[in-house]
Amino acid sequence: MQAVVFQAPGKFGLEERPVPQLQSETDAIVRVTLASICTSDLHIKHGSVPRAVPGTIVGHEIVGVIDQLGTAVAGFSVGDRVTVNVETFCGECFFCQRGWVNNCTDPHGGWALGCRIDGGQAAYVRVPFAQNGLNHIPNGLTDEQVLFTGDLLATGYWAAKISEIQSGDTVAILGAGPTGLCTLQCVRLYHPGHIVVIDPDTERLQLAKQMGADFVIDPTKEDPTSLLHSLTDGRGADIVLEVAGVKDTFQTAWKIARPNAVVCVVAMYDEAQMLPLPDMYGKNLVFKTGGVDASDCPAILEHIARGEIDVTPLLTHVYPLSKAMEAYELFESRRDHVIKVALKP
Image (tube, rainbow, N blue to C red):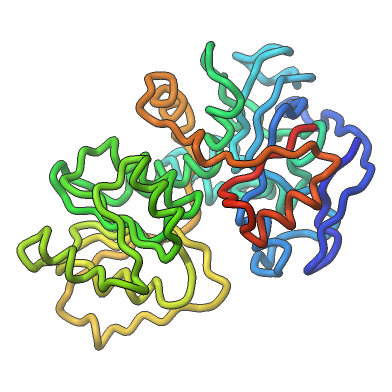
């Protein structure tokens, strides 16, 4: 089968690989029907994920059909349509029992798929701990509607959940890329008073408005502090979600937050960030950050089925897997109004 492989730092390539086989009674083999290219894949390519293993098939946003099942996997059948979780997790360790599946202590726990073990930008993928890593796609939903469930939407849902959003809050989201827009959709579930999306890309800001943002700001043209103060009697944002991870966005995040706010850092940075404690002394901020605990996929799928989450506008391009390198070039260069690119085996 064809597969996109992390060949060496700075280099991905399309290779012929054998179809994966069951290695454990808890495994499943999924025939991939749609997979997407993620910014995290680019982080792997550019060396920002030290744990990534050269020679690994990449890809961790996947939907498909179960082709084979290990004998210990209950509740699923061959032929079921499923989403695949970005994380593999045992479900039994100290962290899994508390929903902190990103920190699963199994050797393949956490983000392994497409990073440390073969992922799903291929015709087939082996899913360890399939009992936990697969979710049934509700009847009537398309692959496109649920493609981002296991990663982007799981990230946005987790970020909104841990941010302690209260009804009526003013929420600022830094970044209108794919993860930021998924976060926007999930923040809306908490009925905040105002959602403000901040990004320098005009087209992405327009999309953010279409997807539920109340206000959008280009920080190269307008200081977001002015709008946030006007919405909050001069206090600043009640909740800030930093989803951009580019130069200066971490500093912007804590500066636009009101005292005693929650600042949730979703972004993956290429460089270390400075926490200027003397400058922020007295703001009494709460920082929450880390890798997604993707343990709410069933709830996300229910929201999609009820029409409460719709991220299909993000999927702007679909390529056959045979043209994956062209798809990567498009995604990385951000040409042709691209937001997200899917690969179809």
